[in-house]
Length: 215
Ligand SMILES: [Zn+2]
Ligand SMILES: [Zn+2]
Image 1 (tube, rainbow, N blue to C red):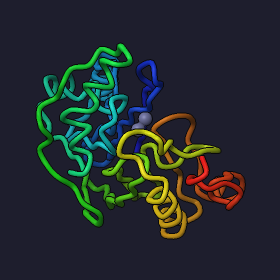
Image 2: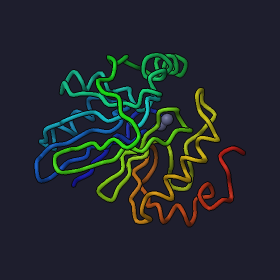
Image 3: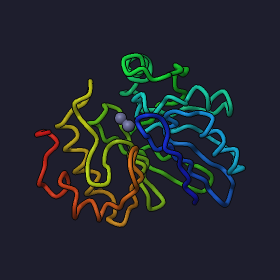
Image 4: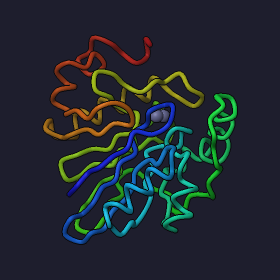
């Protein structure tokens, strides 16, 4: 497996390209902005793109979906609880923040907790971890987790946005930390990658020194 990424847009979101070396097939996770740069990354890797997987549908994670679909004509996968963002709220947020945004067509496939997604020989299990957004999912497998804005190196995603839930965030973090192996490499929606072990040691939201409900 190869993982490449580009940090895109004013909100510095991480868009990941996940490649199965054995088959040359790939998926892109959270194409948030700067479609041309993401398209160049995919073309440069000389892979067969299978799909666009979305951890959630905040504006900084879906801004380049329309451009990628035009370039590659691949299906978009999203948890249905984030449809309010995908279809309406993200466009509103873009207008409010003055971000260029192209409204993408409706997603092609709904994903749910426990779904197993394939990319060539790679297998990822969908874990529904709401709180930062109602339909936030993490794609877990092959020793890594793409958790979107659930868990960052040293911090967690904010829960004060519309449809956010601090209580859900707490149970999602607890589940994520208890069900995944400590050595899992976490690729977050913002900032550098980390490991679950490192976060369990030093992240105040996992050590119990801070609770998201008090933020
Ligand atoms: Zn977000
Ligand atoms: Zn984000």
